[in-house]
Image (spheres, rainbow, N blue to C red):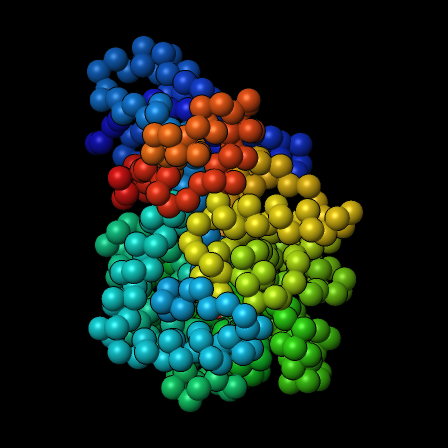
Length: 430
Ligand code: GUN
Ligand code: ZN
């Protein structure tokens, strides 16, 4: 049995700030961690008195947050980050898809998988719903690396049968066979799970979507992820390709793919009917603010999702998104709501932390295990400790309140401020 006691300044959001909860702040908190699980949480002196002999780790020089949860991030696109100036379909054709073709080479894919997992850990992301590769061997490479490092990763084979470079296309039969084979190797193994992943219905016709539905049904507890309503040209083309469907969400819903274990990325241009369907199915949306800005996709309406009761979490959408940091995504989410003026939702620092942690855990069905630092949860945590006299260090020392400190972390925090990362009690960075 491995037991240690953490002494830290802890910020987390166990209750949704949008639903009356707020920031939980404990200045001198003691967390007893036994075999990776938090078994006691109280004032440090109290936990210490009850466990006088346990090894203590003093993290008071920084701020301890729950591990960050990224609900939409593309593994094969690490090397494509930062291509600016193109809308979605042109960016896919010129930038993302040529790079994704290179993952046919398993050695290349293995190198990219290592860079990708390193990118997640560096940013303090401990749990991710990862958009995989079109090549099964490359998906194996990603799961292998995620397992080696110990991250909580849900991922799957990306499948498509039209509109993409030929190398990225498959058939419904092959899509199903390869998906089931991958799931049999990885789903439910340690911290890994399988996600059925048609790229988007623009590139996945009804036969492939039906194969996805079969895989989702056969792999108990699998997740479903794809893209939806990202860009007006994409939305118009999907409507042309699916004349019998009521709307974009219906292209998935008609196959039974939209439910509480579904996460659809973007949804920048939804109709009211689509929001109603998403809410009634209990599906989640991954809001990807830096990607939406970089590709000029538009401003995500948090208010309409809230009004219809659609669950929202945060995604970095690397590589259309401009990096792995969910602090940056949170800040951009805040900016976008500001830019919407009266139609925007004023996101508080606690809202941003909730979006980057517990909301993601809820979207991924992992809220009983991760997303906050309560008793019974895994010790998945991020220590934010800037270098002495960096602007964030200065700002944290002069923060007027815990909410103010958190605002400064989202405004100024980056990978170099992530001084430690733990997953299930094991330190994976720092
Ligand atoms: N839609 C289909 N594929 C992609 C992708 O790789 N990135 C984004 N942002 N949208 C997509
Ligand atoms: Zn994406």
